[in-house]
Length: 552
Image (cartoon, rainbow, N blue to C red):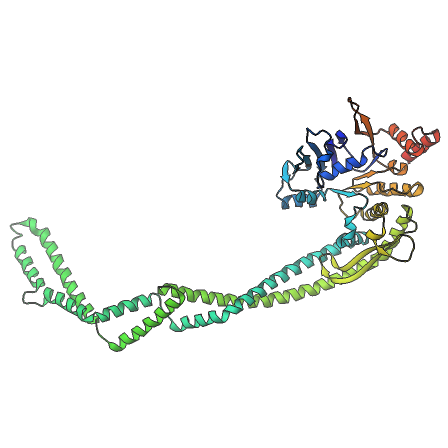
């Protein structure tokens, strides 16, 4: 709800503050007084393009601020969060036009783009100007209107949720199918690579160990010579070192009684003697392992050649990397199988959801078709009341492929002059007629639909008398559920307002005319409406008529 509108240095407005109430606010004034200028300023905070021509004082910037109570506006709260903007119960929308022509927009003092401003303020203000009813060209608005009137909104919401689920599953299925197609191109080659590695059946570090074993077998004679020589020196020569060491130990042991300080040395020599004996045994064992087996060497060489071929093929240099590739190929081929299983599962789920969607869509379509006759009849009654007795409204509902708002194509049609030929509403109706049609539509949906502040610009153009009174009554009824602001020239409409703003021009101290707005008291309202009826000097009859209208 719009709580306050502040306009500074805009066109012929120096400074203006308007504070509408939460119901029907009527705005009256002489032609040229500035009512349209106020709407132009309001349009700035709704995202319209700015122009430096509106600067009344070329040395100061123009500022338009709107204060909105958004505490109960959940769609707006969600839109703020989606745009990462802070939420407060009172939202301040500000637009500034600098002297150099640059424009800036703010939501709660945070700069935003015009696109974001337009998106968010569309949830706060619905401005119905002549030739400005783009909503009537959108199928979803028309379907939502039909659902609100027919009480099928809950069914439509359930359908939309099911549609969202189906779209999500369908999207997942398409992604898996694309992935499958991509992987299938590589699957055969990957399987070939995996088969090679599985058949090779390398063990961890096998190639490194085989290479080492072959190097040993290639040097077998030298290795045996070295090991045998070492063993001979230690244990088998004419004077084996181990025997000499043993003899030395015995001699030192014989003098420890007179030199006890040599006992630690003796213990160390004994330890060395035992260690050398172990070394001799190990040398013998290792020497026994070294053998020259041509068949084994050939077998090992073939194994190594196979391994080096696969290492080169995959651009790696160790057995561990080769085994890692084998594991990865197994995982990727397993993932391909998992994708196939996922496609099968998602296909079944998608088919099930689609059947449910079709069923729910048929249910929604049937309910909408039942609503159409009574909706058309009610609209035609209202069109007569608002001064369009020759107009005929109709609704064309045709089947379509399932979409977010149902499996229906809808068109609002109008025969403006009983010609028997219906056209699309937005083509058949004039600007003033369109405003009244929108008023009729919104009066029928007022209880069921959440709507922002509704602003009607001269919705009563071209009508008078009873039709104008009916327009006023519709606006008043609508204002029981939504804040409504209506610019009007009809006393029957102006009298229905819960707050009445009078727009007028007044010279400043320098004699320059500027637009001003005054909230009229009850007695002032009677006089203003009397002047709308009987001119600048209204008669007693006009005053009584005005008093009756205001009191009605």
